[in-house]
Image (tube, rainbow, N blue to C red; front, side, top):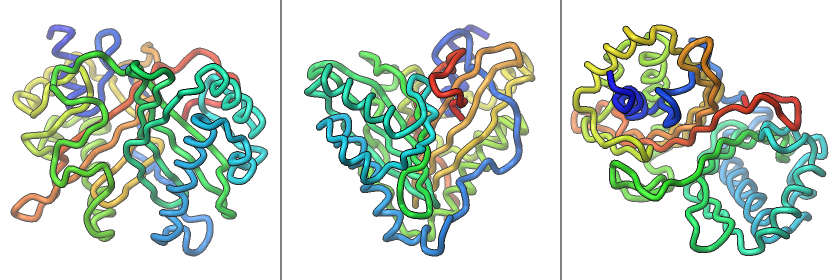
Amino acid sequence: MARRTVVALLAAAGFATVAGVAPASAVASSGPAHHAPAAVDGLRSGAVLERNKRVAVEVLTQLFEKGNLAVAERHVRPDFIQHSPTVPDGRAALENQARDLHTRYPRLAYNVKRVLAQGDLVMVHANPIQEPGTRGQAVMDIFRFDRTGRIAEHWDTREDVPATTVNGNDMFGTVSNPRTNEPSGPCRLTPLSEKTVVGYFDTLLVDKNPDAVDYLNPEFYQHNPSVPNGTVDMREHLTTFFQLFPDVVADRKRVIADKDYVALHFRYRLSPESAEQSIMGIFRVERQPHGQLKIIEHWDVIQDVPATSANGNTMF
């Protein structure tokens, strides 16, 4: 198979890299690697989830757009655990990062696009732009809140936004209906959406079963910039791919489901010898006329894992 075909088929499936031959792989895991259970009664309540969403957005925008360090003191634990590889642990290091960025880029805009929350986790999908007129980056941040409602831990994955995409979609918009970036539908949709997306992930990357394509709506709108829309010939390509690369595995770390949106964070590698990648993806689920749920839309951010980290933690 041509390199472009290999890249495209896995990216179209929601699990590819755009660097090298194909995605950097991960180590297989069929375990839940799930969102953490609620730390206190009521943490999963709608009011608490909405509060955590607001806090996550406030911290990102106030710190990096305004240089307002007081927001970190108010909402971030002093012993804050950091998984972003360029930043040390601790609230003070986060404040230093924000101070330096605001000094260098006083017109930085974080441009939050969508926010998901479940349990004690919040994901923020954004397009931070340091200088007006530039494309910036696609970034997905995940925050873990402690039992007091303060931010205790952070993971992120980021990549540069390209000038063009092969599917005609940008990396941030919503194409499927309803055309809103906010999670939509009743709360009872959340566990069903989660089951659908986790089932797709496990069928494709744990079982290596090309029938995972059955989880996708044939239209399947794609926001990975290297991949076309749709699922034409995907089953056949996946069959060939798994014959050529039988060691592709993924280690699912976090799941955040919010109505019709489900976010996954996972470690990815093509083979035991391949470089690791951190991948965060968001999937949108749509109810079909016969009542079945299918995945209709996908966004992702892919980052190579560096050899060293400023905090001594992994990205996972």
